Structure formats: structure tokens, C-alpha cells
Length: 276
Image: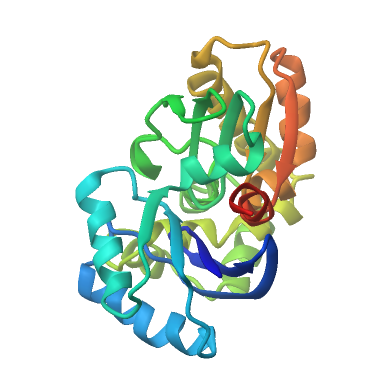
């Protein structure tokens, strides 16, 4: 049996696979070596992963995650897992997971639109080009965190109708002071901001909401996808934002002459097929 992990900043999806078939699936909290120490991630393995495994022991672990794009960060993950599991651990980026899951052994453009955003050109074996996402402060166009950031900016600068602004603050039990504290002082501000995506989705008929969404998705395609200059390749999308906003994304892509291929909520099914 092998264990596959697809980890973002918010959650980690785990799947135990035997002969190409899923035998156990569960979630733990997200693990990101850019935001967490090795000790914190080890604690998540101990308290989240081990109890969920129910005494099943994998022969190999394939861990794909946000923040796993540098050897020293990957080693943090590997050591955290091997502290509690003796199986060999292969660590790859969430972008490699998306490419393998969406493209399989064929070439294409693979994109992630979830809490964060990312994209790459894939040749069927490896990632050959990547426009750096830069995170939600400098980049991450189209991501849940950036959509939330734009919404919060509109709320605090009175760019929404008063009734909608009050509805938002009441629904999430927020004040301007709590918002500023959550963004600038508390850990995982990207998770906090991405948590407002459902509110945005529910109010797309409001012009100010529609404008911030379409502007962010347009920026994602123009600042990232179009830089690959491979318009003959299909553009595949994965992630919660890609899944729930796919109609808008397809419309914007069509206007830009971009051909959308597969849209998936999670890469796990594709990874099971790839490793199976």
C-alpha cells in the first residue's frame, strides 16, 4: 500500500492506495514548511495522521504540498513524516501534483486556484516552466486569499453598498479591528482571507463583487498563463476556486483565446491513477 498526500495551507487530503484503488481517505490540517516549523508539522503527523491510519502502514509515501518547491523545505516534510513512519517519502510540490493529476503523461498547462494560485508548463514528465506565484501579497492572482483580500479592502474602504457591508461584518462577526489583527498579527492570514470565498460566490450579482472577481481572474490568465506562450496546449485547472468559479473562468479564458481542458476540485483522483 502507498499513502498519497495532497497538502495545502488549509488542509491535507490523504489517501491510502492498494493496487490502484483507494482503501482509506481522510483529512488533516494543512502543512506548509514556509509557515510552520518541523516540530509543528511533526505534531500534526502525530496527532492527525497516525490516529487516522487505523494501524495501516504504507510501504511508500508520496507527499505533495504547498511550499514544497525547495530541497531544504522538502527535507523538513520528509523528516516530519519519517519521525513517525519508516516508509520512504517522496516530496514534491503541489504544482507537480496538479501537473501529474491533470496532464498525466501528456503535455499541458496545469494551474492551481485554491487558497493560493500557481501555474506551470508540463511536458508530460516534468515541470519545464513556472511563473512564480509570489504569494498573496505580491501575486497569487485569482486565488481565494486574493479574492478575500480584495473583498476586505472594499469592505474597509466603503466600496460596497452599506447593507452588503453590514451583512458581511455581521455574518462573520467581524470588526475592522479584528480584521486588521487577523491579517497583520495572527498566523495564516491567507487562510483567513480565503475563508470569505463563499460570501463572494453568493453575491456575484453585486457589481462591485463581480468586478473584483473578474479582474482577479483576468490578472491570473494575463500575468501567468499567457506567459507560457503555448496556446496550442490545453489549460487545466484544479482547486476549490477553480471548481466553484469555473463558469466565469471559462468565459474569461474564451475571450482571451485560451482553451480550458479539465477542471477538478481536487488532484487526488488523478494522483491515484498516476501512481496506480
